[in-house]
Length: 417
View (cartoon, rainbow, N blue to C red):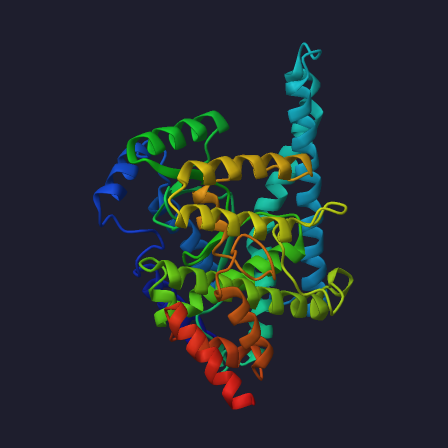
C-alpha cells in the first residue's frame, strides 16, 4: 500500500511537471518587446524545478514523518518557524551594522552574528523537508475532511517548497486597467526595477510595475519562506487550490483570459481564507483567529484610516477617468492618492494601472482595489449560499467568465428563494 501510494505520487508529480508553466505565453509583439527589455533579469524556472521536484520525490519515496504523532509534528513546525524568526532577526542586525556610517569595520563587528546566522541556516536547511512535509500532511488531512479526496487520496497531492521567490513584472495599458503581460524576474535592486519599468513604459506607452509575490503555483509550488505558521497555512491552501483548478476550465484559462484570472485568484484567496483558520484551529489553536475574523486583507487598517474603503474609492475614480479618456488625470489622481496612503502608513512605491491590474485580481475583501468589479461580491455571496466549501469550488471550476459567474449566482438566488 505504501509503495503504490509513493508510485502514484511520483507519477503525478512527473505528469504535472510536463504541464505548461504558469506564465503568459509570447503571443504578441508587445509581449516580445517586454521580454526583450527584461531578458537580462528573467527568472530561470527550469533551473529551480529539478531540485524542488527531486526534494518532493525524495519525501514521497522515503517519507519524513513516520514516527511523529500530530502533537510532535506540530511542535516541530513551531520550532522550525521559531528558528527562522531568530535567523531573520540576526540578518536585520547584520544589515544595520553594514548600513551604520559610524561603523568602521562592520565585517569584524558582525562576526558573531554571522556565525550564529550560518549555524541556524544550516539547521533550517537540514529540517526544511520535514517542516514542509508536516504542513503538507496537515493540509492534506483537512482537505480529505473537506471532501477533496478521491479514494482517500487528495488530488493533486499537496506539494510545496519553501524558497526565496522571484519578482513579477506586470504590464497594463495606460488607457484601461488590464493584466496584459507578466514575466517572472530575478529579485532586482530597487534602482534596477525602476529603470526597467521606465524603459517599458517609454517603449510601449504602457504602465509597468515590478512587484513581490508570496507564492507561485508551479508543481511543487514556490512558497515564500515565512516565519509565520498562519501565513504559511494560508499560502499553502491558496496555491494548492491553483493546482486543483488546473485540471478544470477555470484553472486552464488563467494564462489567457483576464476575467478568468480574477475569478481564479479570488476563489483561491477565499478558499485559503476559509481553510487556513480551520487548519490552525486543529493543529495550532493558539494561532487561530476568532471565528468571526475570516477576512484576508493585504493591508491592515492604521488607526482611523480605512485602507479598503479608500482604495475602493481610488479605483472607482480611476475607472471613471479612464472611461472618459482622461489618462493623465487618472495618473495624477493615483499619484496624489499614493501620497495619501504613504502619509497614513502604507508604503506603496507606485500606484498605477499595473498596480491595480495585479492587486485588483484578489477580491476576497469587501472593499479594495477591485472597485466596482462584481466578481468579488458574487463569489462571496455564492460561498455564503453554498452547503460546503467543496460544493462552492465544484460549482465554480467549470466557469471562465464574469457573465457565467453572475448567471450562476442568479441561479443560486432563484433556487434559494
